[in-house]
Length: 75
Image 1 (tube, rainbow, N blue to C red):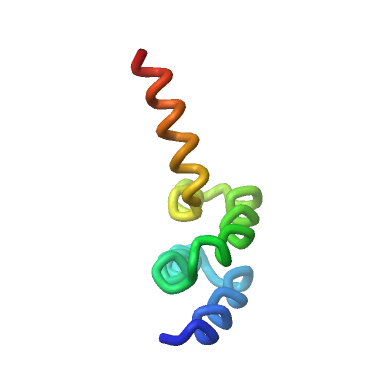
Image 2: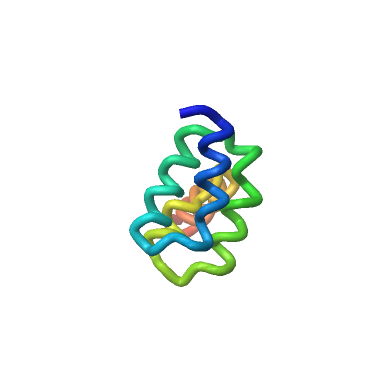
């Protein structure tokens, strides 16, 4: 699958049902660089109420924040 095809699939996201949205997120994570998909994922996190979509929309910056928080909580 080419980058252009993935971007075209990503544009279908708002019209997709919940299962399609989850699969689109998986494809975007695998095929598009983190810098390019970060705005897309941030938008999803702010508008989605599905817990699985929110988990799939985690960016590298979010992972760093979670590590810091978990280190503080463990102390």
